[in-house]
Image (cartoon, rainbow over all chains, first blue to last red; front, side):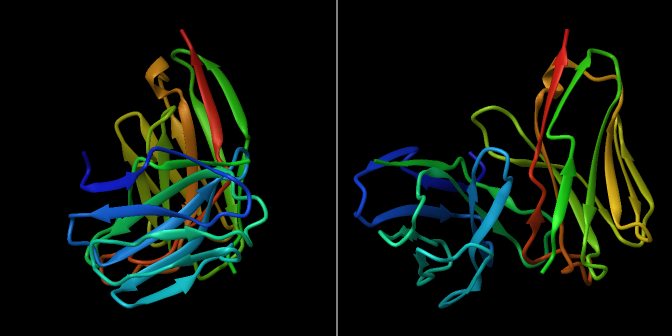
Length: 112
Length: 117
């Protein structure tokens, strides 16, 4: 289903807990991206990585952390420092020679 | 950094009518402008894009126009159908080079399009 997967689809956590969202792709894409989607605010970039072992902050990186130890994987950790973590999180990947970011199915995180 | 504004936030049309969604951007260096469609509960998917060296691009019922001077671009959907109902996002990037747009995108806020049968 598109070669990029996110798990789980729904995630529930208590306030103060860190949580890690998974993103895996088998498209051999170099770049991977994490976005947050809130109603009325579109997609906002959290972090992105264009090469293994390297990543850059996006527009709303505070309270989040990532790693890129393998080309196929780009996990996102939502830390307790993120003030409003409840949101829909989308991962995307892109080929260096392509012209399109491919999105995963998303993870809906609810923190109470 | 780049800022993309998208209007309207909601758009309701009758089947067969045309729909137009407009976006403005702030960075004059932006050179790649994709449009994504997100159906309810599904992932965003690219439907059309335009580079800054082109003023208009058409793909069947969908067209995009770009005005670099005014820094705005628009999505036009003709003969709308109920299956066009979705959220549409515009985006901008300054990464287009050598035939690829590899790089970060800045998205607009999205437009909820509803096509009534």
